[in-house]
Image 1 (cartoon, rainbow, N blue to C red):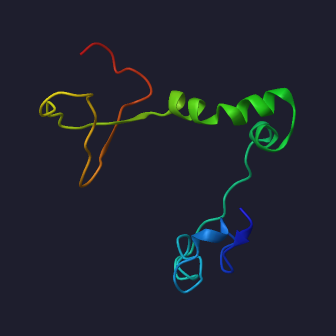
Image 2 (cartoon, helix red, strand yellow):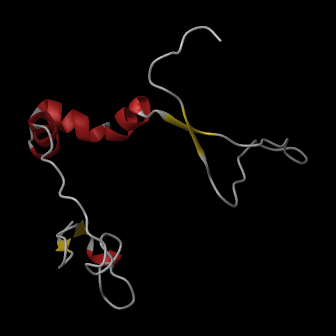
Image 3 (cartoon, rainbow, N blue to C red):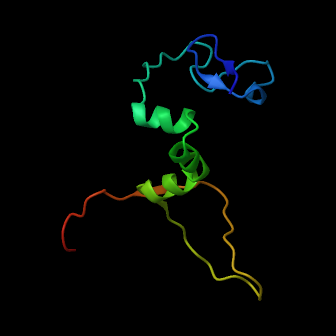
Length: 108
């Protein structure tokens, strides 16, 4: 990411400019006030910027860690496939997420 919004400082890839050659997905040209982000924890900064074996391992497996620690799952109405062949999901329209609590509420 090498580009910045001129209003709020959000970082972008160069290819994320809109047709007017502006970055507007963050604060919409300064029209939406955004609160400042707090600094990331030092451990996370180190894992994302250093070249230690642990940091390299983290970056190689970052999607796995994200999936393992995510508290959201996707729900869908599943229809059996027509005919034969491999099963696949056919998604269209709106996608919703069901978020479960991170701690069990006890027996149900």
